[in-house]
Amino acid sequence: MPFPFRRRQSGSATDLVEPAEHPASGGSGRGRLAQIDELTRANRQHRDPAVEGRLVALRNEAFGELELGRGAVRRPADGGDLFAGTTGPPEVSGRDLTVGHVRSGLGHHGSLLVRDLIAADDVARLAADIDLAFDARSAFADSRSECAPWYVHFQADSSHHMEVERWSVESHDGVFAADSPRTLFDLIDAYQSAPIGAIAAQYLGERPALSVKKTTLRRVTANTETQWWHQDGSFLGRVGSLNIWLALSHCGEDAPGLDVVGRRVDDILDTGTEGADMNWSIGQPVVDRAAQGAIVRPVFRPGDALLFDELLVHRTAVDPSMTATRYAIESWFFAPSSFPDGRIPLVF
Image (cartoon, rainbow, N blue to C red; front, side, top):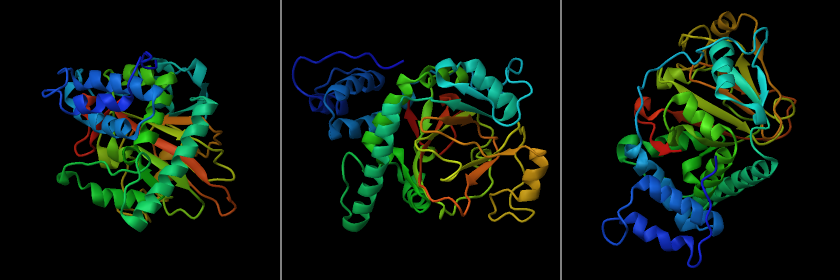
């Protein structure tokens, strides 16, 4: 459900930033979660780079205010298979999506394909945002001058090794969503307006947090070098998660999409063996045994999303015949009680 909206009678969103940054010396002392709500409402009326930048920081700072649940890492299917007999990722419309669909799709089939998860105007806005974020990143590389609100380095503790991981992501067709404050604002707004906002919380059992290092804007061509089979659980462990891989352009035919193992895999597979390209990737023979013939390349329309957790075996799907660019955003949600170490939280 979207945040409540209330028109402000005077002033601008910027007026709220200083008290939010210093609640003990001039602010009301309200908690950071309340500040997020207030700044979000204000920014909806008056878009402001200072507010959008402050919201990124607040979402990180507010993590300690979240209530923790039991934190149990569980198999996501806790009921019967709603998609019995389906080969590959089952499908459901975004308007019909329930947490039961998510649990059944992931728990029995490894993933769930949601058609029209977000509205067409949100798709267009986010795709345009990605172009602006990538352009601003290129301008930063030339001038070392950040371009608010489209590209501003998220400031993290030095122990988080952000510079190394930022370089790695940006070298492979990506930009951290947290490094583009306006895009992150628009992304969270789109998810709050879609069913997935509430469903993510129901699925994880707690108000979720996104990961700075695992929420990424993608603009990918067939020249990409990211087509390695992998499970994110190889890096994250068995933490319990929900990834929303959101397509913002048609992909899987004329533009790179995803290849996925179309069945539930309950184990972390061996990496770095049987011809694997990387020590963290999975060799094709290992994938074939796990897939048992169920390797699928879904075709995505703009606004469609694939939902999965850390155990899905997948890779970027590339074919030499592809000529178009794929726009997508991957957003990893975690329960705060089992948030993976070092991944840097952003309250959703």
